[in-house]
Image (cartoon, rainbow over all chains, first blue to last red; front, side):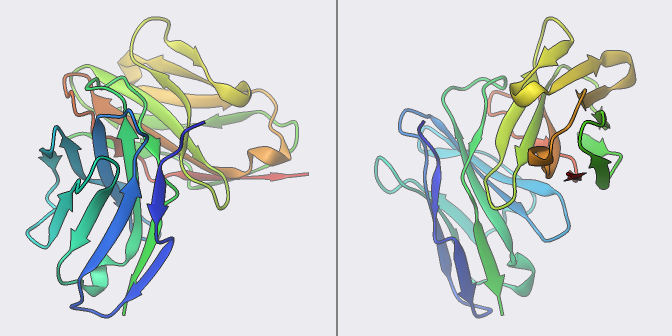
Length: 115
Length: 115
């Protein structure tokens, strides 16, 4: 069964550094997402991406964040200047169509630790 | 704004006990409702979802959930749990009129099943 994959599984960085989290969505999916979960808190929506542009973003997704689909397979989340509070598990998800009823398939997550 | 509340943070059961995990949401319009499960060390997986029709939905591994519109609830049930059901369970909703379908998650319920 096709799966969403994410790399790396764990990223440690210094505050102020740029990080890029990578995701490979399921190949025929059209909608892509990033969510994050700070330890002990809810899974929170960051951004959705469709047709090569941001479809919706949350208040968390400020100018320090950007997303890109640089080729036909990868979907990346960049944090330009990391802060301590960016430490979290970041989940990528994808779904096949533009319907709210469709299932979002999640990747295993990247644990980001900002020191 | 939409929100989701899961009543129990940690539930401990013995094998063969019955399970009910509560989920309430706040949103005035049409919603799609989901239960995801995260087994230790694995990614979020869909257990079941509801978007229309019979309010009692059946999912994988013997789980079911009932949508009660008047109570804004979507509780997850299983008649007899197994040790392998030990996991974290997340209730999530999205607005039915949102094509992008961003998910709003509850805080999760950790289920521990004692053999």
